[in-house]
Amino acid sequence: MEQNHSAKYIYDIIRSSIENGIYVYGQPIPPERTLADLYLVSRMTIRKATDLLVNEGLLYRKQGKGTFVSLPRLHASNAITSTKKYLEDNGLKPSANVFYTGIRTAGYKYGSIFQIDEHAQIYQLFRQRLGDGIPYTIEYTYLPLSYVPNVEAYDFAQTSLYLCLKDNGITLSHSHQTLDLVLVNQPQSTLLAVPDGTSAFMRKSTIYDINDRAVEYTLSYSVAEKYVFKIS
Image (cartoon, rainbow, N blue to C red; front, side, top):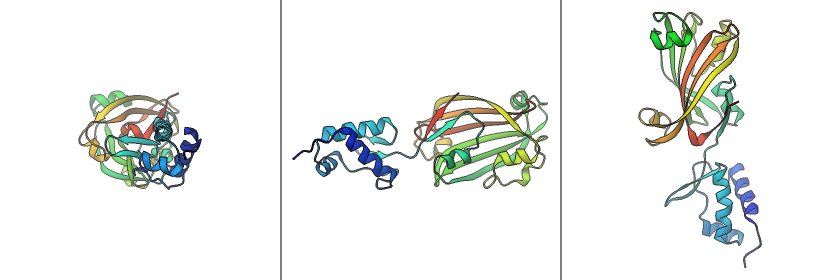
């Protein structure tokens, strides 16, 4: 006999099961019919409850395959905060893979960003950022070498970039950021562990110190379903 349970009641049960690890990230929840039989409600009630969770980003549907638990979504702002702290604040264990570091001339583009001579040297850093071992973001970062002459002594798989800046007497003040929704393909899609054509946030961030010098520029790609950006 069907019980008079509301969709909100079922929503609370499923949400609690996700939060307590009964339903695991990336795995399907039981089919609607199974849940309807378990809680003695109609499939329509189950569908309403799961619709609420899909709208909140806790679940997502794959056509013909079922309803799955979404990966945790990071709540990020345009404040000057490291990716490592974003991950930690969202309950994830941060890690990083460094794919490339090197020194090059600034050229016109980065000379303009940093207001330095285009023949001046800049440091490049290309990293993949992970939470609980899952790729969340890839970052292409550039710094004027004259501001961080000892930068090559740092292991940025283990160390925060902002520690390097601090060690070089740089106090951060503010940032200018732009955010666009794009579709990623190779090589970004592989590094983010998503299919070609997946939606991602492309963020361009220029960070300034207390002397109003541009000291860091980062271009990053983050899978859209894993992030909620709050721009203030």
